[in-house]
Amino acid sequence: MRWGSLVVLAVVATLVCGLPAAAGAATLSDSFAAREAVQGLPIVAVGSNMGAGKEAGEPTPKPLAPAGRSVWLRWEPTGTGFVTVSTCGSETPTVLGVYQGTQLDQLTELGGVANFGLECSPLTHGVTFEAIAGLEYEILVDGNVFFVPPGVQSSGEGAISLRLEATPPPVNDDFAAAAELLGRTTEEPSGSRFYFGGVFGHNWGATHEAGEPSRQQGPDAPSVWYRWTAPASGPVRIAADGAFGRQIWLGVYGGESLESLQGIGAGADFVEFPASAGTTYMVAVDGAAGSGAGAMTSFGVRASMRLAPTSVPLTLPATAPIDSLAPQTSFRAKRVRPRARAVSFAFGASEASATFRCQLDRRRQAPCSSPKSYAGLGFGRHTFKVYAVDAAGNADPSPAATRFRISAPPRL
Image 1: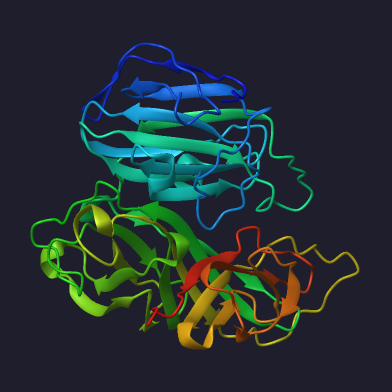
Image 2: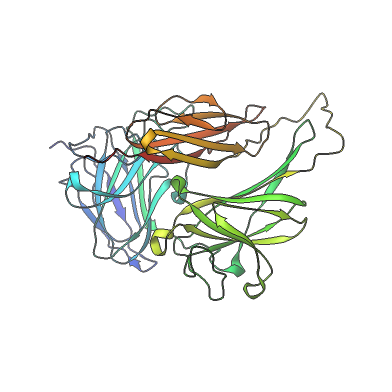
């Protein structure tokens, strides 16, 4: 069986979140059967997948497009807790998959993700899961030859940096430590004004405080908190986008303490309500549908408003400032019809004049408008991405993306 390039791992002896590390060294192998095992946290690997290949029966992290230049590692935790595996710092875009199982063709995927470029953060471009002491986890790293940013060339081979580390608990787990949700106002030449604020978050390791209001997720939902102050009076939409399209639950409240909170609205994915200028609102995000570790995920939280236009449209001077602010793209609805092998999406942008470009699976990006529908789809998993582009040509660098499945009809 052929071996690929070897990657030497530095296993640092430390204690992180109750997961003690074991000192030692290991190698990543092109051979699943000959993969080496490491224990503990944190682990930092620096190496290359040059010359590696893909074995028969090897899984493909879904819904990604690996190059077939994969290397493997087995990891065994020495404690129970949330762990994040990432390839941030690699010199080539990568695909990462985490599995359980001992047979190559019978592995169960816990998570897969693509590193789109050379810059990323572990929580947004890694795989986070709850590691259980006594179990073993298989980690696959491959090259990424499809989901790469414009201007980046990827052969699927190159230097790789692999990290395994304890997932930091959310700093805004408690109501008293709510994170600020900040934004800014943009103004179009016509006088139209828009407000948009956004922040990335997660609820891995979060808890439910005593006295915290219950939402549809149930009293034990692991929640985190945000604080948002309305820049003006008018309708506002506060929304949360879960990783890979996972549904997020959130609630909006008025009040300065858990005991004095007054419910304004709660629901899945977004809440809309009339805001009062200068008023501070508290936002609780529960995470994905479910309870326990299954309800924990990463997400983006957004606040958006269409403000009253200025009384006089702007007159552009000869040296008008250049619009360098990219619009933000968001989904409004998704409908999958497996029997018809069809799907439709509704989406929007933070700038009213924005146009859109859509991409389904490996197809080329193409101009599109909302709603966008596809029919005659093949069975299996699919990925849809949509980019908003404003009048100045600024494209959303983080497009709205979701995945869905067209299931084959049962055999009679």
